[in-house]
Structure formats: C-alpha cells, structure tokens
Image (cartoon, helix red, strand yellow):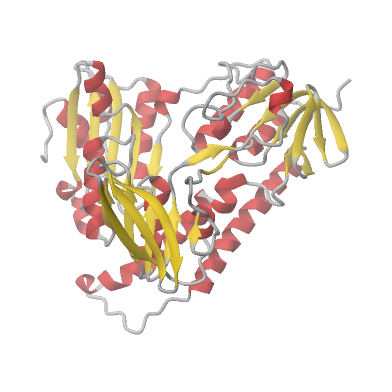
Length: 460
C-alpha cells in the first residue's frame, strides 16, 4: 500500500486548494512546499502583496483629489516602511491561514523542494514518500529578457518591485501587460515618474482592443507615460543611473531613455526544473509547459499537472479550478473547468475585467454578433463617486447568447462576476437586462449594456 493517495508538489493556489479538496474527498494527502511559506507566488510575491500596495497607494494618491469633495488635507506624508510592513503582515497572516486549513483538513505539509525519482515516489531531501498519485502544481516565475540581468536592485522583476526601499525618481516598466501596469501605477501614485515601454503598438495584449484603448487613456490621465512599438535592446549602468537603448519597431531607429529603476514585466514562464520530468518521460511542449489531457494526466500514468505549469490562462483562480477538477476526477467524481468563462482582471484604476471572446476574435472567426455598450459617464453612481472613466461592453449572438464581456471602470473586477455567472448558466442579454438592478449602483451599467445589445438602452 502507498503511504499517500496523493502528493501535491507546490503550495500555491492550485496546489493547496487541490490538497484541501482531495482531503475533503477522503484521500490521504501531503503537500510539498520549499518556499518556507504556503501560498505560492500569488500570495507571497504576486497577487496579494501587489493588491495590498495598490490599495495603500490609492489611498495616498486620493489625498490630492479631495478638494473637489470639500475636504482639505495638509501635511500628508508617505511612510513607505509602514506601507511595506502592512503588506508583509497581510501576506504573513494569509500564509498562516493556509497552514491552519491544512491542519483542519488533515493535509500533511512536507517542507522542502521535491523531485520525482520514479512514478509513485516523491523525494524531498533524503526522504522518499510513496504515493498512488502525484500532482505537479509548481506554478510560474517572471520571464527573463535575454541580455538583461535582473539584479532585483536596479533592474527588478515583479518580486523586486514589491519591496523597493525608496520611491524611484523615474521607473521604466518594460511590458504593458497586467503586472507592469499594476506595479507601474503603484509607484506612480507614490510619486515616481513612470514610463511604460511596450514592444506592441497597444497595451494589454489579449484584452478587447476597444477596452484596452479606454484603459490606456485613463491610465495616461493618471500619470503613466507610454512608449509603444519599442523593443528594449540593452540596459547600461552608469554613475547617473540606467540608460536604456530602445529600437523603434519597424522603423530602424534607436532611442535612449534614462531611469534609476527598471521593472522587467514581459510575462511569466512555468517552473518545472529540478523535478526530473525529462528522465521520467513526461511530455513538455516547446514553451516549457507540461502537456496534459482533459483529466490533467501527463504522459506518465499516475502523474498529473495543473495551473501555470500547464497550457492555459496563467491565473490563480484558473489554477484553483484545475486543482479541484483534477482531484474530484481522481476521487471518482465529475470534474470540469470551462476555460471559456475564466475571467481576467487588471487591478489598476480603473480596473479592466474580461471574460469570453474579444470583438477582434469574433471578426477574425467571421462570427455574426451584436455589441452592447454603456459608459460609466452615464451612470449616476459613477458620477457621484467621481469614477466615470470607462465602459461596459457585451458581445452576443443575434439571439442574445453572451459570447464575451469586457469592462474598463471602477470595480470592474467585481462587476464582471455577474456576466461570468450569466455565461456559465447560459443566461442571455435579455435575462441579465430583465433582472432588477439596484439604483444607484455601478452594476446598472451592466444592465444597460445588455439592453443596448438588444437595441433598447434607456440611459444611453
């Protein structure tokens, strides 16, 4: 008999949720984590600390806009150390919370870095644990840029950008994706000049183009500078700081940019090194992702993989859904993840939220569709709060089936949930529009966008 029914390698959102769900289903489970704290990248150096800093920096930045509300604030100052301390406490409390959940559910925590010497065996240090099944949930790490050394002091990844000792005078962010924009806005709010350099001619690749333009316009109003269509060639360190050499894409022209800090945020890549997968014969694709089937099974029986180390959206909540579905199927139950209804959110101000297909994808596929839009400028709650940037955009079939929904606006990450549920349950734009939405509320914009898709918006 195996010692464990399942050993999960990795204690991030996918791994720890899978371990807890497996234990709830009656499996004897262990989770291996070498970081020294549970929660993975998301909790320790990703989603949670960045949202803590976004929240704190938003409060600081808002002080300069309170005069319109009849509120005068004098003598406000920034204590960056206290702000970082608050962030670290939130992270610490949440990691301890996961450890408590492990004890509550009977999950064994094995501390250390794991490898798989053979199917059914997981090695941690000198110890080898036997198990019927192995679940790889090792997550991802920042993608490096060839020719650029990340020292986490002057040239930083997202990890270093979460713990700078001082507010940079000029921070250059390389990459206009989710991570770059979120962390760029944190430091912009705290007083840094922030320039975002992007290879493409737009920000937020993969997001609906119209919504991305609204986001860029709003972020520009809030202080971020954008240099699009530029490729970073090199970073040189000198007495005066950092000199970036940029190529104008397609124009055979070089430019230089001075900075004192540079954040490299060009994406993330799976972490699978050190596991011994090649020797085991586990199939890995050309981009370094573990290949799995619809049951999350790899090419080696008894070894499964989920989350950021397999193809699909690299999102914490997607990893959680993967983990739950995988272990439920292992336990003989039905498990399924609908990747067409996995939302993505950018927690900038304004927030950007998306689910389903973009208008560009529908055009490329030749799909017949209708569009419904409603701007927050026409929403009474948004006016009252002074949060009028952006809009809700809904894409549907002529019959009303929702194909995609995209939001740029305050609380967009919360508002998208209604449309995710609608898509999941097969509700149409008329179903959403027929539901009574409280007034005054930001969610009325969702109702109005659905009404607009039907050609009968009231307030547009």
